Length: 108
Image 1 (spheres, one colour):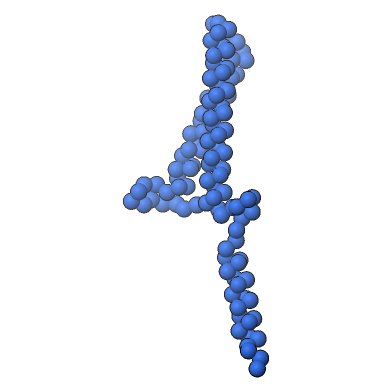
Image 2 (cartoon, one colour):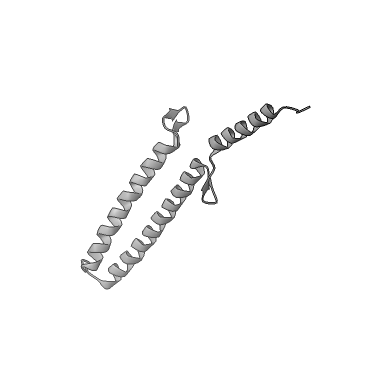
């Protein structure tokens, strides 16, 4: 990923770091709320049921956002089908093969 700022605003890495920090804070709040739910700190069962449902939906949204961030990280790193493309190594190999062909000459 890249760092720094451009005329368009913060670069990808800063924005991803901020998003991951926010998602971490949301998960902490969800966990605290679920703990209160487990300890029956609600006046009515209806409130507990609604809170539990809302917490599950919020947690699912956090997981979806984390998956999106992971996908963006893979794209930034050049990972395709769970394999990273090492373009520098490919460029070096092509250069070596071309050099061997030049060294071999025309032979005649």
